[in-house]
Length: 395
Image (tube, rainbow, N blue to C red; front, side, top):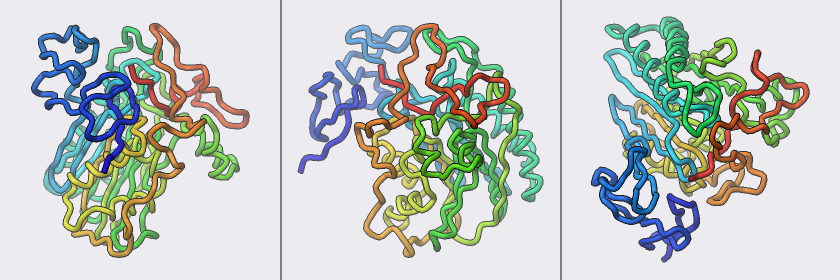
């Protein structure tokens, strides 16, 4: 049986058993990146130039950040650059000091300078402040909420120190979204800015699953103004964010949400590289429930990232998960995972807003198609938000 997949270089459909992509010649089954071999022509690492490109064929050699996996304290984090972006602009962190756990993911805004450095700075600052403030005791939900707000402010300050200029990149200041969850006892305390998300995925009941974050997006602004969710998310600019972290960000206003865990389940924190395909808690639950019995958190995180890649991988994907108890998914998941919502496949649907972002020209401003429709406010003090949550064209 021939299984179709996508070329990691050009995104064309290839057979899983193929050694090379017929469209661009990329070697599909390359040695591990740490061996320093060019995936396209097989040249050694010494053939790379200072920017990481192979001087023999021009292909960019894999970076360590292209795919990351971390496991700690009953949690796991997996991050992948996806199939369309030329680099991974997501970042994340998980920590499990005695008495609590913290999960953080950040999604650098693609239409700003050095978004990968912005997201990395924000994630590192966020987890550092939380761990320093709460370590040595089992904090209550109220204390955790206060510290999370302080940590978001620290993450904002950290992004200010990301390099403001990027050769050949966008002119807007480095920016990122952020979502984080502190787990203390049976309490979940979530904070977010932008459209990275946090979920409670309940093992016993699909109805008990919850979205713990609130998107800062034009779609949500439209819904608040009276539009139906269907109308709001059908807009081409639906995923344009209205709040972010960065020097040109509007007033910092993180969303803070607290809930009591009712029983076994999964805490999920992710960037829109996953939830663009599985937008509801119910669809994510079915995806998680399709795993084998006894699956560990790292394997669950890998499956979620793989599902986003199989659905098209149009964005960077970062997933952080923490398991509560020994989840049994008998109440759902029969028959395997659901189809991604919206029907996004390997080549994307016509008109899909995730497919509209152009490559960043040298010295260019962000694309002009971030205009705000009448009746929906953009971020205070800005002509338009810095991002439509779309995909960056591959080099």
